Amino acid sequence: MVRRWGLVALAVALSACSARTVPLSQGPAPQAGSQTRPTPAPTQSAPEIVTAVAAGVVAGPPIRELPLSRDQAVRALAAFRTSCPSLIKRTDATGLTQGSDWQAACTAGATTADDDARSFFDRYFETVKVGDGRAFATGYYEPEIAGSRVRQPGYEVPIYGRPTDLIDVDLGLFSETLKGRKIRGRVEGTNFVPYPDRAAIETGAIERTAPIIAWAADPIEIFFLQIQGSGRLRLPDGGIMQIGYESQNGRDYTGIGALMRQRGLLQPGQTSMQGIVAWLRANPDEGQTIMRENKSFVFFREQQTAAKGAMGYVVTGGVSAAVDPKFVPLGAPILLAMDRPEASRLWIAQDTGGAIRGANRVDTFWGAGPEASVIAGGMSARGSAFVFVPRGTLARLSAPPQLPGPSSSGSPNGGAPLNR
Figure 1 (cartoon, rainbow, N blue to C red):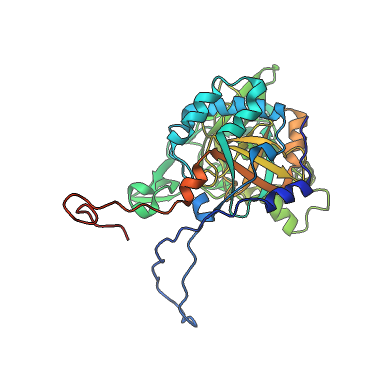
Figure 2: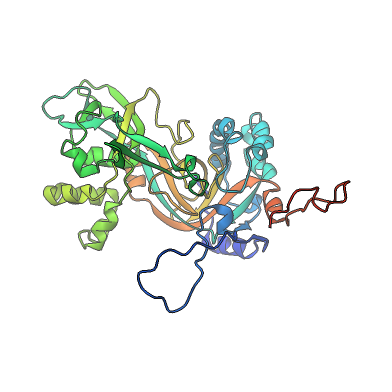
């Protein structure tokens, strides 16, 4: 049973946090572009906050003071062990750690008994707040919908595999300033152009280039399965076909719930996934138009295991979470203290998501089944997030840079220019 940490206790812990802060990174000033109209006075744009270090990092409360139950610690440790082989090899995009930083915890975690799981986290980790630490959490789950391997009456909605003409482009190969950025599209003649959006795909734009791996019974169900990223097809003979994320068309994700709220289409208490689905079913024509405003479209593959996250490992309901890997290292533990008791627990960051962007944005995974659907569909929680990093991380980040000492030749920098 989850032990909830009261908001008063949370406030006390936050006020006691260390004041050591890793300041915002000071990147180069942006280059001025062409002006179509005069500006009152020249201004300098603030550097874009794109990583945890750039957002600023502050020490969080000691782990022994956090609301971490034995059961949470045991389940989180099991998921952490699973992540370790990748964690110690990955390049951490947050700027917080290096793969080798996790080696001691991974080695110890492999042989830690369940009874020592809580003390394990206290012994090998410290907590940090990224930015202001204010978190927003949603939920996702593994849907089970009606489907068929072959087209037949009642199963008319194609579930596409990856198209043969979909191309991924790593922009970092072309410019250092674009390192880490990728786009998807296709070639038309000598041009690289955006891939068809949802509306175009649903009206036949990729019939000749994309395999159909199965057929769904309900367009609304497959729409939400695309949002979740993986799921199960309940076949006519009672069997199950497991499908998982293969790729995406490169178009930006748009949450239709926000659109519907802005337009006054949803009444109070109707803003959960279940409420949105009910409205779409009651308004099929307008509903189809709204769904197509989400231009993002997901392609699937059949898989033999349960849902896997971005690290390539099977995700665990109530333990695994999706994060923005530029702000939380993939594989790291993250504790949420929220206004929803279900979300207030220790999670392991094992997944990512197209809509999960920015510091302290977390999408909690709840597994499969009706209960998971209800919790995930109604999850909207606010509170605080504490990222667990290897002990010594904050001290290293806070230390002033060390300049090289004088060389034997008398040159103050060993004959090499200093970076200024």
